[in-house]
Structure formats: structure tokens, C-alpha cells
Image (tube, rainbow, N blue to C red; front, side):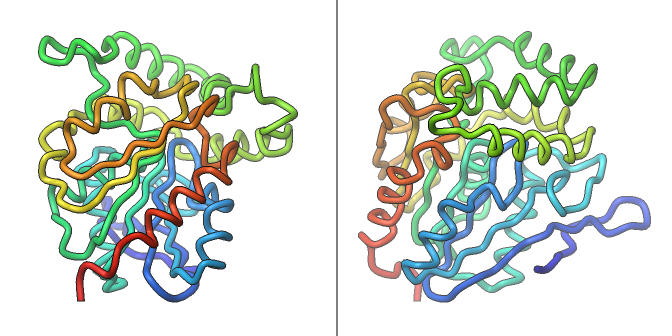
Length: 283
């Protein structure tokens, strides 16, 4: 529907594409890698029917947004989100991220605070810290991410296929919870992303969010599948209850990474209940 300038590269504006539908309490949905805002379609229908205003947008480098070669870090992603929220003058927001989008939610709240946010949800989250370091032995070795970037640079379409195979657990869910058409649509969308962004975003998965988490002062819902092959439960969501003040963790049995698609009924039910369980926090 609309585009908003969030920066500049050389003489051109960097714009993010967003859609803003409905009325009522605003729910801002932030998509995962390597898709776009339309990947929330199974949530958008339900939220609109429940009387909410739903805002989706495409991260820079993806979908209908600009494809610059700079700005692929979570400080910039959170700043882009803040620009959109301020532009629309949103208050009493429910901020929900999936996969990479959980990084925006966490960094936004950790950096910009919750003055406009009533509560937040992380679905298949990246936080707290994926990279293995001396003080984070639970993480994954840097060589793994380096290998991913090498694969994405060498053959982006093949890299995207392998990623989406794990994203949807196609070895188990093909033809049942994931149709060939849905898979192909995701691959088509993934390969339309900026070649720069497809590689650069991988390094952001190594971001340390541990300093952001204690600053979150709104209720947080975390939903994760216990068969996530992209962001394993034990290395991500399972660690969050000890790091966020007010958090509810829901684990979906048999859920892959892409639970907003494969287990939409369970995700939507939890999300609607979570949204409805609090009165407006900011007037």
C-alpha cells in the first residue's frame, strides 16, 4: 500500500514497503528470513477478523522494500521499525516477530523502550545469543555461520532451497502441512530478495541480545516448535524465561521453524489469547 523513507544510499532513498489494514488495537508483524510481510497471511486474516489493526512490512532488502547494500544489522533494523511506528503514530501496540523478526522486537524494546508497546511476542526466536563464545557455550560455532554465508554467496537459489527444506521440515511435512505450491511460493520470494541482503542477514544471526532482554518491561509471549531445525528450541526459546522478567513460553509439539504456517491454528489461538488478556497499557 505505502512506502516510507527510512534512510538514504548515495542519492536514492531507502524505503520500506508496509501495509496497514483494519482498526482497533494495532498489531505490528515482523517477518522472518528470507520472506516478506505477506508470509503472515494466516495470522493477518485471524487478527483482522478479531477486530485488530494489522501492520506488516518488508524488511530492507526483501519483498517490495528497497535493496540497499548497507544497513543489515539489528540497530538499523530496529531504527527502521521505530521510523514506521513513529510515522503511523502507533500506541498500545502488540509487537510480534517471527524468526529474524524476533531480533527487531528485542532490539527495539531494548533500545527504544516500551512507551508505545503494550506487549510483545517472539515466534521461533533468535534471542538470546546464537553464537558460541567463552561466555556462551550453548551457542553455535562461528564456522557454521561462515559456511552458510559461503553457500549463499556461491549459489543463492540452491542455498535458499536447502534453507527452506529445514524451515518447513520438508522431509516430514511435505504434502501434509506444507504443499508443494506453498514451498515453491516461498522459494520464489526468497530468490527475489537482494543478493547482498541474503548473505548479509546471515551474520546478524550472531547478534548478542543478552543486554536487551532485561530491559524488556512488557509481557512477552514466546512460541516455539520442539522440532525446529533452524533455531533449535534448547539454544533459543528455552533459555528466555530466565532472561525476561514477564514471559510465557509455549512449545508446539512437532512444530518446525515455520510454525506460523504449519501450525497456524495453535499460533493464532495463543496470540489472540495473549492479546486479549491485558487492558490497554498506554493511554
